[in-house]
Length: 409
Image 1: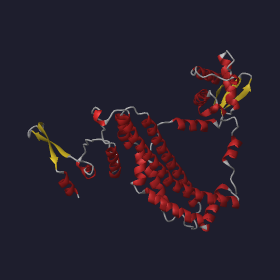
Image 2: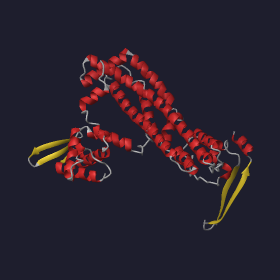
Image 3: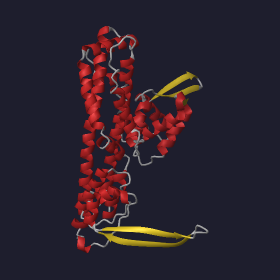
């Protein structure tokens, strides 16, 4: 059974004019009109025609720099007539529908295809990525579910379990993949900001104070440091075995036939497709992770080149630069030891001198990158009767780095 192409399924549900408003010079007016009309219509999906015309007039007046074309009412002096022409173009594109119920009862309906289009446009326009902290829990739950030995057992009384589990796992994997693509978008945003940085201090701040501790590191550390990638790879190989098992395919086909009323050949096709989809989504986690690694390496390289350009190639040699201080509070607090090593190694490539303050539990990691170690302590003396602080004494001593390393080994 061959599946219809995306273009054929798309054109069967939307008109060829559906995307034309986005390619017009006045596309901003169409997008803002669609958003305002959808918000005003609410879940009911309709509003009085007069209200729709009023909203379109407001949007047109908010874009005085955009020139309308002739079929959009460019030659009309009356603002209401121009709004009416634009409403007709929205109807031609099947973004809106004109509903006439009586002589004085006319409504503007939101087309069913407009809402998913608006969701896509909002996703493209959004700079802030949704919460990524659930990423690790999502993938751990998938691994735990598929690692159960009874998921693919073909036993009496277990009918429907395989279909239910695979449907649930597919949905959770899709959510995790969306989150990973969100990480790619975050890195692309940082990349764009870094290309526009004006000073060496801003370049370093973006690299260490923002990029190094962003939400995307939660996903990165979960996959690389949390050991999820090897588990996912093992499960992918197991899913390939299940997909090639005729008994598993037959049992799943029977479940699908009973649940969706498929005919036998259609059920068998969807059975293979469901198993293959799970396997591919498991494999895609590793592929996207590798793509993220490449993006992060590219961003680090861009930051290094940007810093060198700002400090050297603009004619400001290191010896002629004024002293600059970049303060980063808790720059490494959310990073694992390996990630701290990477950041400090990158700082060395920048030719920076770092002064780092950290608690003693970070010594095993930090001391490998330090040339001079100073220990700072605070001693407080208290009044025995009142319990109040009588004196505070601060002291610093230089520590023998080599002996300290030997003591930590």
